[in-house]
Image (cartoon, rainbow over all chains, first blue to last red):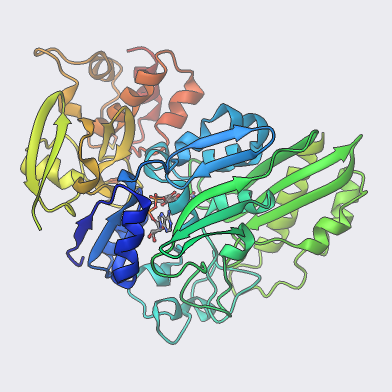
Length: 325
Length: 150
Ligand SMILES: Cc1cc2nc3c(=O)[nH]c(=O)nc-3n(C[C@@H](O)[C@@H](O)[C@H](O)COP(=O)(O)OP(=O)(O)OC[C@H]3O[C@@H](n4cnc5c(N)ncnc54)[C@H](O)[C@@H]3O)c2cc1C
Ligand code: FES
Ligand code: FES
């Protein structure tokens, strides 16, 4: 591990100033549950580490019925998972948070870090000079790829590991990004990029940009939401495939639904055509099976991951049945 | 760059001069000689290194000491008071919840953090609280029993 200088700003302004002068060599550090492993494995080589945790006013969860939900980047996954307001109004976030890692990791891990964590691809994490680290090849393409993507891949085939990102995408959340040049607010979908556009980064964040806050619109009356995650190990694990849905229905008929998928693509994924095709559908097993039978039939599966196609269809069906019945 | 880090460990205020990049686990074991906290996987997967910081169970293998400035840390050594073991420690012994013992300090610290917030947990709540702790000897049944009735 490269030895590093440890910088502890107490305001966002101070942090941005440091980052604007040497953003490329400075690693933003929150809970460190992902960043420390990346430093230890020399995937990250920055020689300055900027601890966000001493910055005042970045750890909050605030909710009201007119403005909706605001979560500060430093709120921990356990604070999010145990918030009664989130449970009552945004069950999908509650369920996704409680599916993340172990209690110890949820106590340290933050929302900002969760959204900006790096992929778990074993070639990326281990000693392979892969495309994501600036090399010339994606070793998963012809190697071991059981957990890799089935859509959106090429030239690199990672899946994005964040559970919170999937839940927040189904809710069309917004991300507030802070830098020395000011603040901008973007839809969470625009935070993430595909490898074809940038094979070395999962987000559009430039060196020195900090995720400051997540915003979710107020819940519409009668809306239901939830998150299902299939893991290889039941106690805790990263998602093999996960599905989040926000649904508005009357008497078992869908008015509208927003579905997001994890574990299948290099970014949290949504299929607008699926959401559209489900409106006015009566929720029962047969109807759903019909509507979902071609979901991801265009998937470009690799040698070991074709099982994800039926898995994602079944999880989607299971979640919608649970939410409406 | 060496820095002075002030924290409270098992009730004692200490100031340590260390590299802020040193892991809390190494500070505990190598500088403070608190070797009750164990190192298993070093990547957040086994829970052997669990300690309690400001009332929450965390993995000391994934925390650098720089992040601990001002915190209150409890390790397995801090549970014994005036020569008497904590009721959780006694209960682990009584229920036969210790086999090789390697997971035990971490397991007890996860249980301790649970009982701080929830003195009468259900079996499911206990299972959830120790989900991040692996016992290679697989004595989970006795461990859960011990946490249920300390
Ligand atoms: C064993 C294990 C199991 C896990 N299981 C899961 C799981 O099931 N689901 C899941 O979603 N995650 C899982 N994780 C990933 C876990 O690290 C995240 O869930 C955690 O929330 C990361 O937060 P952090 O604050 O520790 O991030 P850090 O480690 O501090 O940072 C992670 C990355 O984000 C960047 N970053 C941090 N905060 C910001 C910010 N505000 N703005 C810009 N960049 C930022 C850092 O530079 C770094 O690159 C697991 C991790 C481990 C070690
Ligand atoms: S040593 Fe820390 S979790 Fe295994
Ligand atoms: S008692 Fe041996 S690992 Fe748990």
